[in-house]
Length: 393
Image (cartoon, rainbow, N blue to C red):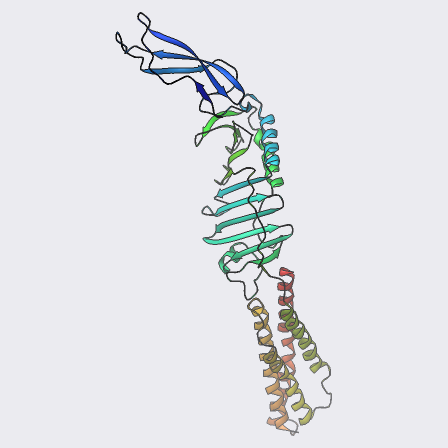
């Protein structure tokens, strides 16, 4: 609070025979006039000399001080009332800037969070990877490299994600971004009532009162002006949160050029085609002829080769479906082995029973039909693709 002193700066003569001089000065503040007593030391005065300094200024009117803020009275209140006051002040502010260090299990993690109404903006580093997040309602907009996505345990990204804002849904990122309501709940936790009274101190030159928990955690609350939260020191994990810019309009808006991270139309078409492929490959064996001839065996071989031909037509889809593509490729390789076995059996023709040719054909037929187990890999591919689709939907 600014004050002005109604006294002209001019030399004041020594008063012979006095050890000090008492003057009354009018101090003008926001609340009106306040009277102060000024003690002037003239111990260094000599006859005809001048008073050289002011020892002290003591305000005698209630409230206010020269050069400082007025205490808000929290220092004389029980911890429970201070806790309610700080929660109410944060609710009334409606915006706040929170910076944190040592978040979670990563002691080097840093977080810079601005909260305003129903939108928040976060920048930070996790496991050494920088990222940015903006949340609006149920949408989470994320920008970061692949390492950041992995550190945040975000779902597999679309192909074009690098360096772009991507839109995900709430819950798809493992970063607990608090809302103003969450912070208020934190401030009103009963754990802060570990001591019935508060401690008055200063923090970085600011007058504060302190609420403490039994584990040594500390909540610093402004002791001048509104009862804003200033800092939380969490003794359980060594993390710290600093609160500044209470009530500041940050003009936060969601990114206008964000891409959706949802399953794309092309990805859906690819997975649907793989599902259809699995059905057609199962039908090869379900509809296999009971009367085996060289012609029917050649037809079976061609049908099994259809897996590889269809996969070549479909292509590899996107990066996040590579695991599913690998499983389909394994299945097609197994079907190709069966196809070669059927070709071998067909080339033998009709062997004499018990002959070496008969034995080789029997082995080839067994090899061909055994390739039906490739359906397991195809099923795994479909399950993997659906798992990724569920993660990003």
